[in-house]
Length: 323
Ligand SMILES: Nc1nc2c(ncn2[C@@H]2O[C@H](COP(=O)(O)OP(=O)(O)OP(=O)(O)O)[C@@H](O)[C@H]2O)c(=O)[nH]1
Image 1 (cartoon, protein in one colour):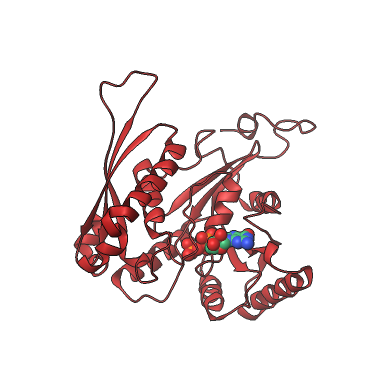
Image 2: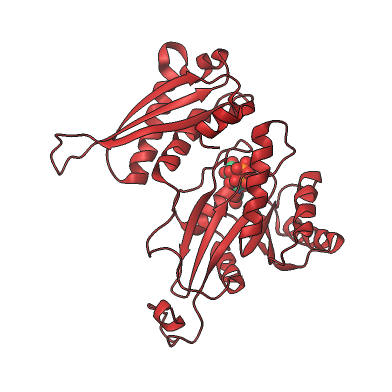
């Protein structure tokens, strides 16, 4: 495809074909809780990646797509890289490294409100080792939490970190995902780092993640809300079926969603289900609202809690649960 046919809708004042259309993949890396998912959502403008106040909740590679007249930026949201303790941990790290090797630009996220620590160094060290000369942009996140002076210090610290490790940051950009501040600027800076090429996805697509996986993530997010620290890594959600209810009038459709919440141990059931099933009901209604918003249709959600013993350590179970 030539450049001009891909730049339809170019802003006024720019003739078509002046700037070539660019498209490609970007991913944000950084320690758990660095604000990667929030930033992805802010860039895409809708809730696609899963955020949580708990670390390491993003398990699936969720892509958000930023559509611009002159460019298409596909965001690949990777799980936090961490020292593997279980088979699942190892797989997650493999997923992260594979993702890094495939993208056109990498955003290294460091929260503005925390000193650069061993976690950041570990990841930056891995980035420095990357064989491919993929451009790397340092993103200082959560700028709304700090004073301008503290932010300036953090920008300098990130610059120094790059020099120490031999990483040449293509840009160093401060942003706030929650406030949306400088998010557009970040997109503006990422776009020129993408290769020339036609759009990779149809206009209007926000993500190519299968709907069922996104629905499962929404349920998992609701199930994690407010539970003890030991649970997050023990919960997996599988959507077994999503079917439109038959015999519904065309103007009042209903989607039946059947999903299982898998836990590692029977003792965890009580936490998720709650007294007289109260918590599970709350999980159901909270996630149903999000699913309805995502899919734009009323949903009947049928949730079951099951125990899949030690699923994190069992390759067969991991595959069945989609890892
Ligand atoms: N104040 C403020 N909080 C933020 C901002 N970005 C993220 N947060 C919060 O920081 C926490 C972690 O954000 P996430 O976006 O889930 O972080 P993540 O890097 O994707 O985390 P993992 O999935 O664990 O790797 C959440 O509680 C967010 O609400 C920001 O710009 N400002």
